[in-house]
Length: 357
Image (cartoon, rainbow, N blue to C red):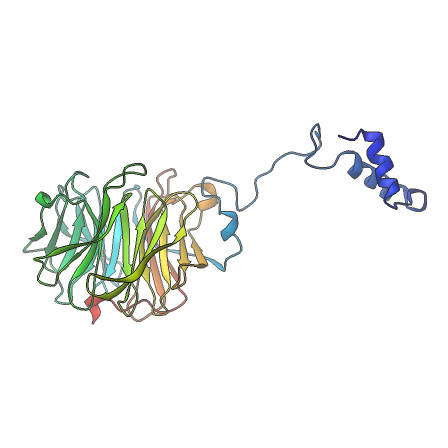
């Protein structure tokens, strides 16, 4: 380590003609040489937060320069913060979503009228998918040891069990394919004990086929617009899985990969657009990360207030059918702003789901 005097000599040896410079410039150059940032013993500088590192949801360095937009408030669900998930539009333009721990299926009309469609306090619904016949399928985590998938009519009547608790799954999210079968995630396990996975249920709902195994709380699931690529997130391991399919529930040779490892906590539910991009809600980070069809990040959507730790628990999103309009659900668990739905626009229209085919 050079002494202060030796550093000054070094600066002079590098060609600084101190006598020819204005005294102020000369002093600044000597100060820079004598107290270079990062040198041990330097007491003239300190670490400072920036706009992207302030708060609990600091943007990862690798994602700070992505094209970025900030969503706008659309509808306040409640002054209280409670967990909502699974936004999905029906054919009448209603936005359906669930109050997880309240066991409620909620409906927000185009006129912004909120109502309760169905309640099952034991189901603990976390995912919603709408069948082409209008029935609403709910994936419920139950007691997080054994959950169920049930279907109800559009008015909340005639509840039918599709997969019961006896099967031993903890269903968290689901998506229909074009044939009327569906993929669902099994939200079991932990970061060190990955026992969850992704499964496919046949259109007659009689056969369940494992697709991905040994996952640490499999959470979100989505299909590409042509149905040939399956995507899933691993909540506790922070990974994005990509699966090439040759048919319903059938994996292509060399068809599985994990193209992205998320930084920080934790990838949740997701949707796709007609260009094949994937929009992943990041729980604990109050944002949506957008990745292209190969799993490379290309953009992000921020929730307002995130830098002050508001609405960190952003869980899911939905495209309004036939548009680029994107609706995001979140709650402000650490603040006082309640439970909200936000709105923005994606790169392209949302993929056309089975409910609208």
